[in-house]
Structures are given as C-alpha cells and as structure tokens.
Length: 453
View 1 (cartoon, rainbow, N blue to C red):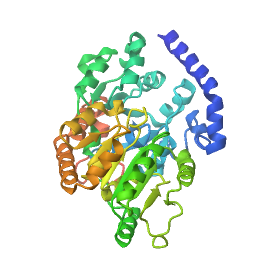
View 2: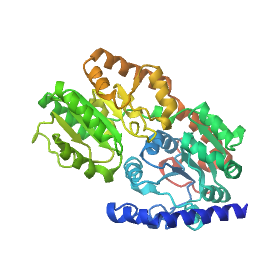
View 3: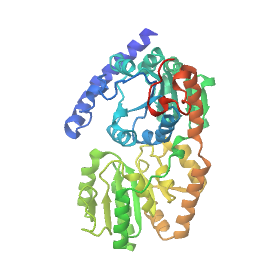
View 4: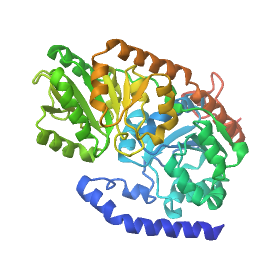
C-alpha cells in the first residue's frame, strides 16, 4: 500500500514539473495562482487555522459550478449543526471568489496539492470530522490522510463523465483501494452509480440522491440586472440573447448567427459571457475585428449609451446567473465546441427557452431530461441562426419551453434533503455529542461555550 502511494506521489510531482512552464506562464501573463501558491503547497492561511474546539466540516468544491451546487447544502449544514464550523475549499480562482461572497472570506481557502507535505498541515490545523467532496474528485493522498485523522469522507452530487470514466477504468484495480476510504457516495443518476461500481466503489456505499443543482434557488435580482432592465426599456431593445459560459471557437459562430438575426431585428442585443476571465480581452478584440457595436460591462455606464443593436460583453465574474431573467433566448456554451457542455440550470430556472450545441457529454442526462420534456433544443452550427430566429419570432413557443423548463425543475427537486439525511448519519457516527444541535436555551446555540458540570 505504501508503495502505491509513493509511486502516485512521484508521478504527481513529475507531472507538476512538466506542467510548470504552463503554470509559470499563467502566473506571469494572467496573474493566476500567484496569491494562492503558498496555500496550495501547505501553508495554512491564518484565517483558517482553527480557533477553539468546534468540530469542523470541510467541503471541497472545485470551481464555480460546484460552489453553486453545494451552496444550499452548506447553508443547511451550518443551520442544522451550529456547533460545527463549516469551511470550504476550491481549486480555481473564480470558484474562490464566488465562495468568499457566499460564505465569507474567513471560511474559504484553496485546496492543497495532493502531496502529503501539503495536505497534512490542513488536517492538523482543522481536524475535520467530516469531509464533503462535491461532484467527483478522487485525491488518494488526501483521502488517506483524512481517514488517518479520523474524518469520514462523503462524495456528494457525484457524476462520472465519459472522459473520466474511460481514464478511471484503466486504473480501477488501484482506484478500488483509494475508494475504500470513502464512507458514502451520493450520485446524481443511476448511470453515475453504475459507473462508480464498475471502477471499484463498494456497492453498499453508493446511493442515488439526485442532482443538488436542481435545488439551488433562482438568483435574486442584481444591481446589473436592474440597470440593464431599465436600459433595455429605454432603448426598446428586443430580442435579448444571453450566451453564457462560451469557450474558444464559439464566439465567432454565435456572432455570425447574431449578425443574421440583426438583419430582421436591428435592436437586438447579445449578452456574451466568456467562461474564462483571461479571454475577456481576446473576445473584445474579436468584436472589434467583426465591427459589431459593443459595450464592455467593465466600462459601461448606464444612460451614456443606448444598449441596442450590438453585443454587451460581460467581462466580470459572478454576474451571469441573474441576467438569464432578461433573456428572450439563452444559449449555454461549451457545447458548440467539443468541450462537454456546461450547466443549463441557471437559465432553465429563469423559465427561458434554452439552446445548446451537440457537445453536451458532461451533462448528458440533464440535457436529455429537458430535451425530452420539450424544454430545450440541441442545435448544430448550421441550425443555430434559424433556431434563434424561430424562437425570437414565436412568443408562444418561447413561453411553452420556459413553462416546461420550470416544470422539470420542480419534479427533480429534493436532492439536498436526501444528501443532508445521509450526512447526518455520518456525523452522528463520528461525533454524536459534539455535532448535535443544542437544545433551546443552550449557550452553544448562540456561540457560547457550555461550562463543564
């Protein structure tokens, strides 16, 4: 067993060494990883070091999508277990920023590299009783050290993509040893459960709980949303296309379709939100090359320019979700280019018709669910302009798609409660007295400390 982890650590170190030119480029060119390097290498931030003796629940969410997925779950854990401290780690910078906004900077930190010298300081500082991993992240060294520290590990909202499944199958005999350290797997679908069993997860520990993302509430109105609503009303803007999470190679295709739409609807606006912040300037350059009228959110001032007949470039983080509420039609990126697609629920939750491209492997079951219900359309590059035009010019079809999307959302809810029930059993098993919700009048309920009797 020791040899297995030793070889894994050597392989990870070799991979990091080979990838170091890329990380260095990203650090120098885009400023990524610079501020988080020490934390990733095992230097525990002062604000995370445990103060007091409260049991710790450690939630890990890789990026923005996972943070959004576990937001309700994290808040419920805080509410139901006030004696516990709930902290959250992320891998990406964008996930880190969103997590700080949702849960407070004092409770958020970067996930360490999966090497013993980086993970061990966090285990010693936090001493978690429960580790909750969102979706599917298998970190052998982390799992081993968490188990040795006495923590139970739960993987929630688990899904196994086609690409991941292919890779996991190749190492399933070794991976089976790693997965033995996980107390419970709560999957999104029956297919995810089947794949987990095939790669070695113990059958009695794998349960279908549903997708937590269906339980996330619709985003409330934001300042930007209200400003754009006023501006669109003043400029008589119609239609509004919200194209979210677009990736390299998609913007040019979407803009070509938008130019066609502009011929019949000269006051149309496309809200264009690239997935990665480092591409904002590149997309702005593409808009200049094409010659489309455009406004950058970072430079736009309300009422100085009429926003109609062009592209509103959303070059900011965390502002996309509320804007689906003003969409006539929404398009979800990562799907025209072969990137596996992105989450469609933020748009569906707003009751707007949704279009995606043909590459939705990462969300196949979800996309099929909405498509089969008539709440979503899958279109290729050639079909995109016609599909946009048809929906823009058919209000009844748009309304029906939006209604069906909301209907699907309602029928798929409940994953959060099922997940909380499963986690409660783990918490009761590992620390029944210290995590139990205090009775009314208990000073611990107000943050106090019970004096010994």
